[in-house]
Amino acid sequence: MDMDSTDQIYRSPLLQEDNSLQKNTIEYTGDGSVCIRGCPASKKHTGKRKACSLTIVCSFCSYLAYSSIAKNLVSYLTKVLHETNVAAARNVSTWQGTTLLAPLVGAFIADSYLGKYWTALIFFTIYIIGMMILVMSAILSLISTTPHVWPAWTNTVSSQHMTFFVGLYMVAIGFGAQSPCVISFGADQFDDTDGEEKIKKSSFFNWRHFIVNAGSLISGTIIVWIQDHESWVWGLSISTIFVALAVGSFLLGSTMYRFQKPGGSPVARVCQVIVVATRNFHKDLPYDCSLLYEVSGQGSAIEGSRKLEHTAGLQ
Image 1: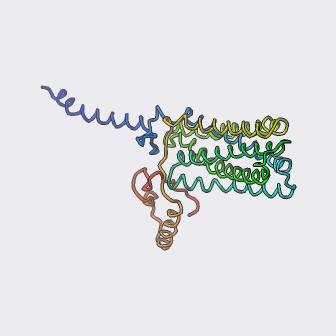
Image 2 (image 1 turned 120 degrees about the horizontal axis):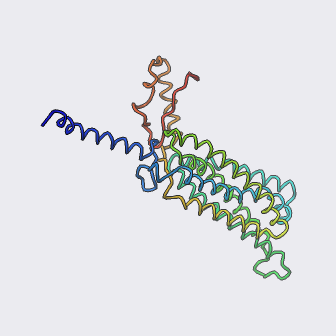
Image 3 (image 1 turned 90 degrees about the vertical axis):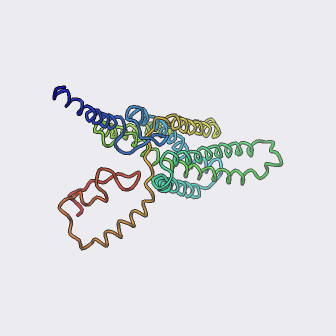
């Protein structure tokens, strides 16, 4: 046996091992994302535009339903519930404030404990139940205005008020809390370690912004017209159908989504940073910036989190 054949025998296993490692690197994402079964996410069969497009459809339908209520809520409060303009404006401001605060709750639960996917589903459930309650409230308003009112419905006005505001605030909490989860979950479908996917990620936000504004246009014209000229029952029922479509489109891509694991409470991490920074206040910075990481390598010590790159500013 000559020396060339001997070298080929000894080198072949090493070459095969290197090829397999390279194949695994290409086959799976590099940002630590997993599939719905908890296995490493495949670059070919998960994520990218096909998965994020479903989250865009979800955002379109959910915002259309919410916007159809927000744009015409004063009209409902004054004309149907017979509130004064001052009371209606106060109720609308309080409701919109609740909607703006709800994302803080949804984002905290998603990042700390449940993940974005399951948090979005939970608050979508609250959202669609709230829409159904609003439809029930609109039906109660029709019952109270009929010429032959049943004796059991003599106190319909107070029941309608209570039913309406319960459903209204469920919509505020459900829509507000799921919104940041769906947005960031759609962005998670692109691998930041892949240069090509990272470029496509920016176009995802552009398309989502365009589609959501298209939903706002449709709700402010067609849905509001139906509410004013046909009936609120029809208008709210159509909005409820769009919420159901949002949930359906979100669930449709469950098997092709990429999931980022929750990384624990951010409040605890902020407190840890403050404590460590206080202890290391008098220490000199090392010349090698890689020594400032909590662990060596590309991964983070916190599960579900990524390392932040050091910058020359804010030192």
